[in-house]
Length: 239
Image (spheres, rainbow, N blue to C red):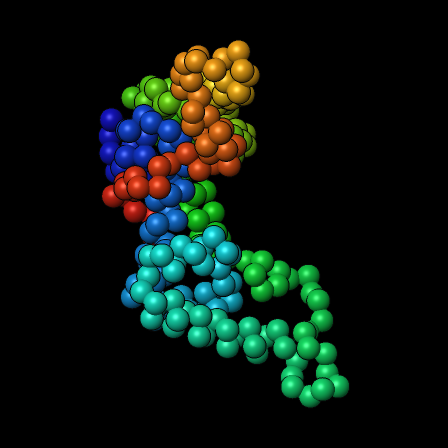
């Protein structure tokens, strides 16, 4: 398979053949962006303007706090809070309203620098994925060999497939649905078995693969199928 700057990170995401490769992709993007924003980039004026404007969702506030030093996070918060003070409050006079009037734009806490940049980078990687699938028979085979695709990411890929010609789109959709449905059927059986194990008649029965069925089901439903300690691929994603 020919490799270039676009194909290398995609191949690395798919090579393990465990879990959902796009969950692995999201973890890679999330980790890289959190490290990026709490590193030297936090002092770049254009980056600081964006973090001041967008802020972070609760999940990614937790992420940058876990990844960066306390000083890095404090410096990011210092300028972000100052901007919120200037933007969200009208003034200190008692006759003025405390908060500015509602607008059509998203307010504080409704936007996130990491979420927005993850979406941009995710879209670029999905484009590269589809290009590889169309042009490289080896990658097409690798795609079919995956353990599964989670529900959110299978939906993402099915939506992206609309740009393909009809013949390729039908094959891609069939492969994508198969990867998602097979896992759904298996985890569904495991959940049912888990529930049945609480019947007194099954007191000494074998739990089989059902003990972690709750966690696996939630991970499939929410797009979080990558183990938290799994290292992301080295391909990187930029901003």
